Image (cartoon, rainbow, N blue to C red):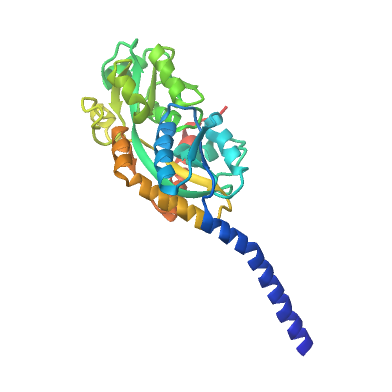
Length: 328
């Protein structure tokens, strides 16, 4: 009996020693992180809101972490191409992604086949920032306000651009056309900037893009700003009314952007990323940049971020099924 107990005790000690052997290098790595440049993957082409925010964040994180944070754009498939790349990267904190909200809440409900499982292949760190959208039309359209736009759209076969199937810009467009009861054909692009360029050129009729990416074009008259999707008017375009005050009461839509990392990234490392992000977003330089670009800091906790994603995913599932929206 004594021998059996000794055997059991020895076996437990061996298992414990083995676990410590595996854990200690990981702990040491987490404590010394970062010791080399960090790659911040942007799942859309350069020039869009995700890219603009990502570059602002990377610049500030570089200062705070003492290592270069390098932006790498990998657009396509509504962000799924970048997601697969990040999911397959080592879970060591040196490859992270700034995902649009739609990737985490819409894509799992929209695409029948995905290269990743968004709920299992990543660890969510924080929602960095959010911002309203802007309904803009081509300068070729003979409309000046929302009512004129809706009336015109009901008599024409219009199309609208987006950053890709399932993107925030796509779903904002779907929400608007549904709320306004107007027909329109969706034209997906590999990023918001490409869609805006075609809107400027008159190749598409309208889009509900992120305020950050569209404001400059609106101010210079290259596109016509019709309405903002926020509850109140925005400082960047004070003369542009909200959708709600223009004829669709209660309408509000915002986009947001969150940091995620490959699953199994040590919590000690994701905690460091979170702390550095909070510090970066609260810096005076980034506060000014965010405000200038029409973005509002969020930086919620991982627990709150997980809950936000879960709640919004459930809502989008109902919307996508109810309106029969397809990725095909």
